[in-house]
Amino acid sequence: MSDLRKTSVQELLRSTDLDREVLVKGWVRTRRGNKYVQFIAVNDGSGFNSIQVVANAEQFPEEQLKADGVENGAAIAVRGRLVASQGKGQSVEIQAEEITVYGSADPTTYPLQKKGHSLEFLREIAHLRPRTNTFGAVLRIRHAMSFAIHKYFNDHGYFYIHTPIITGSDAEGAGQMFRVTTLSDTKPPLSEAGEVDYTADFFGKATNLTVSGQLEGEVAAMALGKVYTFGPTFRAENSNTARHLAEFWMIEPEVAFHDLQDNMDLAEDFLRSLVRYALEHCPDDLQFLNDQYDKELLSRLQFVVDNEFKRLTYTEAVEILKSAKQKFEFPVDWGTDLQSEHERYLVEKHFRKPVILTNYPKDIKAFYMKLDEDGRTVQAMDVLFPGIGEIIGGSAREDSMQKLTQRMQEMHVPEEDLWWYLDTRRYGSAPHAGFGLGFERLILFITGMANIRDVIPFPRFPKSAEF
Ligand code: ATP
Ligand code: MN
Picture (cartoon, rainbow, N blue to C red):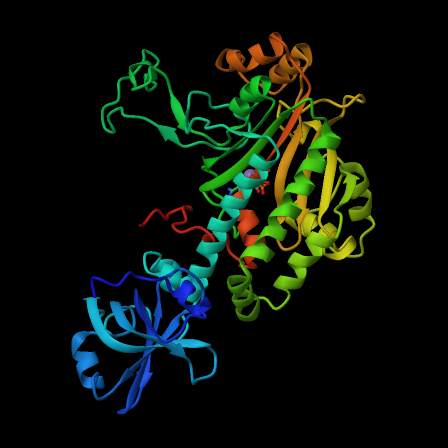
C-alpha cells in the first residue's frame, strides 16, 4: 500500500475521477452484509459522510473480517478501486482489494453500539463520543466557528490579544474564581492572623484563574485601537444549568472610540456573520443536526441572518414583562436582574427575534460600565437569543477616572489591585466599548443542541472533571 497516497473520505466522496486505485484510512462505522458481500462504512472525521467499502466475500469472507477485528470502531486502511456506486445514498464507493487493520475493536465490549445512545450516556464516555455522528458534527462546527471568529476580526482590522489565564486580581467583576496555588495542602504558611500567607506562594500573592480577559483587553485597546481576545475563562459558580460551564471560552472585542451604539452594531454584525458562515460552510453537519434533533434549526439560523435584532432599554423591557399575560416564577421589578425566563419571553414570545437590551440599572452591573447621565443606569448591553437567553454581555466602559474610582469605592472593588487598570484612565483615557460572547452559547445556538455540556469536548461542571 505504501506507494499509494492516502486520500480523505470527503475528497473521495466529491471526486469525479473514477475507476482508479485509492487508499483510505479511517474507522469502521458499520459493517453489514451477507455471505456474498460485505459493506463497511468508513469515516475518517474529514466530514459528516462515510464512504462505503464493498468487500467481496470470495476475497473477504465475513468470518475472516470478524476474526481480523473489522468491526464497529476498528481503525483500518483500505486499498481499492473508486467506482460509481450501484446503491442508494452515495455516488461513489470503494471496491476493496486490500484491508489492513491498525486497531481492532471488540464488539462485545466497545461502548458505542450501532443503536443510538442518549446524550446523557455519551457524556459518561466523553473520550469516545467524538466518534459519533452528533459529536463529529458539533466538533467540526466548533472548529469552523473558531476560524470564522478569527477571520471576521482579521478582515475588520482587529488584533488578537493573548490575555493571561492566571490573574493576580480577584476583582474582574464577573463571578466566583478558582484559586491557583502551589502552597501545601496540609500545612500552608499562615500569617499572624491565622490566614493562609499568600506572600509565600508561587507568585508572591494570591492568584486565580481568570473569569474574563476584558480588563487586559482594555489596556491593549488603548494602544492598538481594535483588539479581541479568544481564550478560556473559568467561573466557580455553582450553577448546574444547561447554559453554564465552569470552564468555557469567551470572545471579547474591545474597541477604542466606540460608544454603546457602535458596540451594538458590532455585536449584531458579528453574530449574523458567524451564523451566515456556518450555513455556508457546514451544510452537511447542520442538516444532520436539523434532522436528528431540531427540525427548526436551519430556518432559525436563516432567520437570524435575514432579520435585524430588536433594540430596547431595560426599562422598556421591564414594562413589557410587567404587562405580560404569562406568569413568571420570579417577579419583575425595575432594579432586579432579569432571569432567563424573562429574557426568553422577550425573545421567543414577544419580539420573536434576537433582542439587545441596554441601559440596565447600575446596581446589577459591573463597576467598569459607563454611567448614564441620569446616574441610575449604565451603558450596558446584553444580546438575548432564542433558546439561549443571554449570549453576549457588554458595555461602553467608564472612561472618567473620577466616576470610575467612585463606582469602585461604592462597590468595594479594591483600587490597589487594579492600579494598572486605572492608569488607562489616568493617561490618555478615551471612550471605548466591548463585549463578551460565550463561545459555547454560540455553539449551542448554531448546533441546536440543548445542553452546553454537549458542545465542548470535555465539559467542566460541578463534581465533574473526568477526562
Ligand atoms: P449569565 O447571567 O448567563 O450567567 P453573565 O452575565 O455572568 O451570564 P458575562 O459575565 O456577561 O455573563 O459573560 C459574557 C458571556 O459569557 C455571557 O453572555 C455568556 O455568553 C457567557 N457565559 C457567562 N458565564 C458562562 C458560563 N458559566 N458558561 C458558559 N458561558 C458563560
Ligand atoms: Mn454568570
